[in-house]
Image (cartoon, rainbow over all chains, first blue to last red; front, side):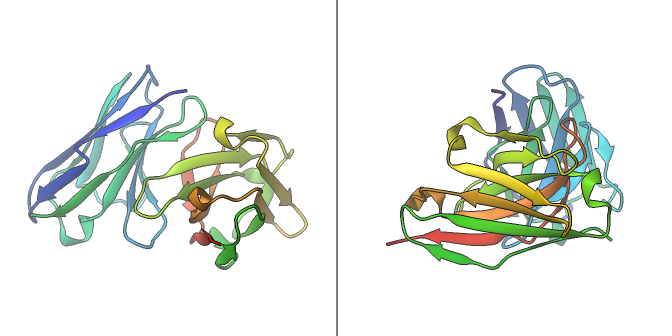
Length: 106
Length: 119
């Protein structure tokens, strides 16, 4: 099974900050990686697929990069609506989620 | 627009079974598979399994093999997830989500169904 490890688990930031979240796979997954945003009491929302492709209607301040085993999600200028929990997901071999990164107010 | 509407909250006793439904609309049901994901209180997302709506093929996560069954009813565009021999650690919100293929992320999600297992 492919394991996914995110860091950090919690990130404290302010509006306007540049934020980076890292996701590491236990083996190479090429670019078969997605990022989701989840707000309390809501279902996750797909932000990025194939490591760096932005889902339609997702703001351009979100970007993804990486391949193989190391991936990053970057929010270029954090907005109030971006405070949420973010999950990476591999889909090279079935599906596995990272444990999540909560972005909270500093 | 694609919509997945799930059944309402459930309270079950340990050892019982639960069956959660997920009614799809806004697309041809057999175009996408349906994956099920659960989230225990305050915890992360756990993929449970997936069913192809076109041929009924299923893949389940190993830890749930033997306790979970996923089915679809193409006549009503509805997917079902049944979990048996419930334990307290099965208490979670259960989500359904569309998945185009085995090499796809989850595009659209249901609103979630809270299943509480308590004596």
